[in-house]
Length: 321
Image 1 (cartoon, one colour):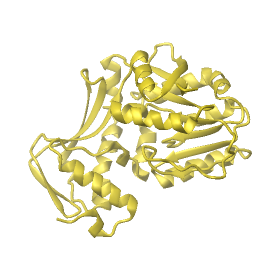
Image 2 (cartoon, rainbow, N blue to C red; image 1 turned 90 degrees about the vertical axis):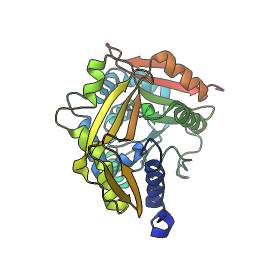
Image 3 (spheres, one colour; image 1 turned 180 degrees about the horizontal axis):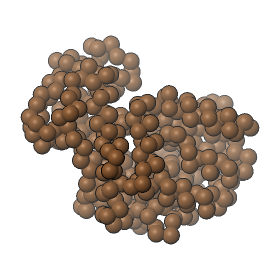
């Protein structure tokens, strides 16, 4: 059996291989959702955010359009805005427009090409703003650029509903990392998808055009291209549903036939109907998110939501502050 190390892969691809091989060897197969986001996956997600069924992006954008100035007042003048999983940084512009003399903008993302393109766009449109992109996985320790002003207030910015992609233990660790980054004088601004009717939730992950299905299947294409895989994409189907027990949308790829798949020299067996769990998206009430934040060392200071209370943006500070 081949190992990632024996393939002489780059560190990033070796990590990808390790995570995929370990995930496919489990009783319940799974692939970490962060591997959706190569160049094509990032572009597909941008397309998803514009779909009629996909409410989170436009709902959060509407909150920012109304309340960005109130958020900026909480963040304070001259802050360093550190955005986790920045993607295309579309909503970030609404916040940057409202901030008073931000000292720097530090977008963090795993998709290097997508990140650098978005960062260049921000730098071009905000010529007085220092833009310092960081390529990396924000679940790992992040080393911020040494050129950042040492005394500037640091804000961890996590828009979208990505906090929901982590199981509670992972989310607590992520929030604890944000509390550490913020320090005694900083804070965090986090987007949270709130609970709502199934008639709204499930179509958001099962769009009529099939863009979400293509996004889900793209991870198999990426494995084929980067890890010498032989997945037949035609023999897997997209599945997304809401779990009432876990308060989350689950996304899976379903094998439609019994088959064998080889990845990086290792063979994996699938029965017909067996799935690969590729993503979950937890939905919170304010009370449940407040408790999660508390366990991560953060306290909600203020929150903003839309009239239907489908989405919330919360400003938090380290509990020790």
